[in-house]
Image (cartoon, rainbow, N blue to C red; front, side):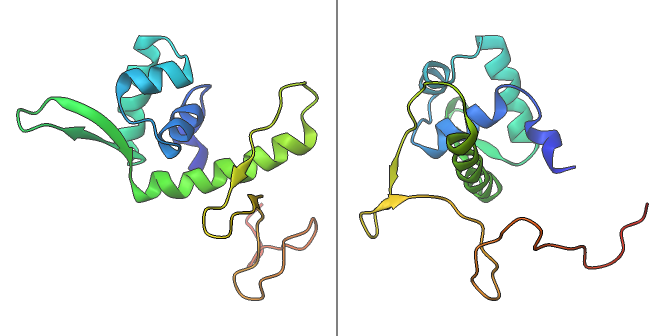
Length: 133
């Protein structure tokens, strides 16, 4: 199942930190705020899942972490989740705005149909085949 790799409190925070520039263990620790042992375990789990990879020096020491393509694609899911949270969050925490560096405008994630380009709306999807019940 797709959520097995990120079904805990910290994993999506780690992917988000890596997606927005953190790479060293201490940077990730500062941004995410997880206990050290938890962070180390999640980094191992995310590496085993193919979401990130450790960058090593010539002597084999880990110098940092980076997202794989699988992890970069998960970053897109986080942007859509952010939009959902911005829409429905009841807390007073201000939202972080992102600027699309290509056009200079605020970036708002949206799911669109690859074939027709239309934004996806509720009720517009069906299974390709009848799912087994």
